[in-house]
Image (cartoon, rainbow, N blue to C red):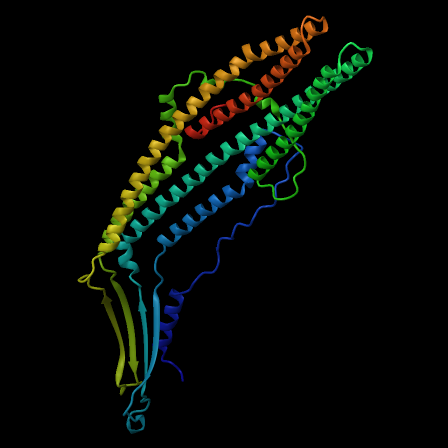
Amino acid sequence: MILPRAVRTAVALGLLTAGVSLAGAAAAQGVPQAVELPEQLSLDQSVQLLRTRSLDLLMAEAQVHSAEGDVGIAGAIPNPAVNGGYGRVFNYNPATCTVPGCSADQWTVGLSDQAAIEDSLSGKRDLRLRVANRALAAARMSRNDALRTLEFQVKSSYAQVAQAQRGLAFARQVQETNVKTLDLFQARMKSGAINEGDLARVEAQKLEADQAVDAATVTLRQARVGLAFLLGVRGPLREFTVDDKTLDYVVPPQLEGVDEDRLLRLAFDHRPDLLAQGFQRASAEAAISLAKRLRFPDITLSAQYTQTGNGDSAIQPPTLSFGLSAPIPVLYQQQGEIRKAEANYDLQSLQQARTTAQIVSDVGTAAAAFTTSRALVERMEKQLRPAAERAFSITRLQYDKGAATLMDFLDAQRTYIATNVEYLQDLANYWTAVFQLEEAVGMELHQ
């Protein structure tokens, strides 16, 4: 059976309008290769690896891609719909027709805009785009907020590795000193200059140094594993070192005088979680307008071609008709959607206020930690550490001259060791406080 030319033309135009392009599909982002850490890892390299290879950050980036997809969906124009039909007229015998070309066949072809025109003219599409674009901006800020948190974790973990490196080096130095002291006391024991009790105390001190080396070795290994995990290492972890000079005490210029009000202003301007909440609130506000606009019915425009039979004696000659259809909003006017959108706006407003309060708390806590840790390090460097070193040196000299007991010597040594271990911890705490203050403010402060 050959369709009439008008029908074939209408079908071809409908199919052409309804064509779907398969090109330009976005390729899914694959899992990156496992990270291989260099033998000497700097702090800048750690941050760069975090920004490019961290799995947590890539997952946050995937959320941004999802929001970009939502923007594409929101801005999509409905495809026109084409329909076709065939029918057969009953109780009609074409053979009885006196005119050639009679037929009982019926063809119908229709085209509908799927309310695309009304969707654009009414502003619904623009409102959907407004909602989606602001949600996309919020997703990007959330990604930046994930980076803010992860950078703090990496920097503080890096400081822990640096502290563990110095701690192990100091423990080995103490161990070496105790070995020499034990050798000296064993020689004195043979000459009868000391008794067995004195030698036993020195042996115990040397064994404590051995214990400290083993403990420092485990601590360093654990710190390295923690840093490697944050950087995305997924294979065997080889030994690597960090630049422990990053622990050297220095006050960043921006933190010479800690002004909490200034830090709060910086935080309000730079904290990505607060900016994200602002975009979420704006998106929720646009969603209210969209829900109210959706009360306007979707008006669908259509065109239809119908023909029954052929020729001059056709039961129904070729007929082209146009139609308009729309639901009548009598029983329901989007009350639920509007209420839900308003509740979401209230929720986002409360979340924004809560984030603001959280920032005030974060900045205050971080500023107090920085001030305290700075004071501890300065006291250590200027007073406590030099005093412990001087006391140990003097007591050792006094012991060699017989002016101090062995217990005095060992006690001074323990104080010297404990002070240096505490100093390393204070340095790590100080830089952790600096990094915590950067996290609280949302920007780098130590450059």
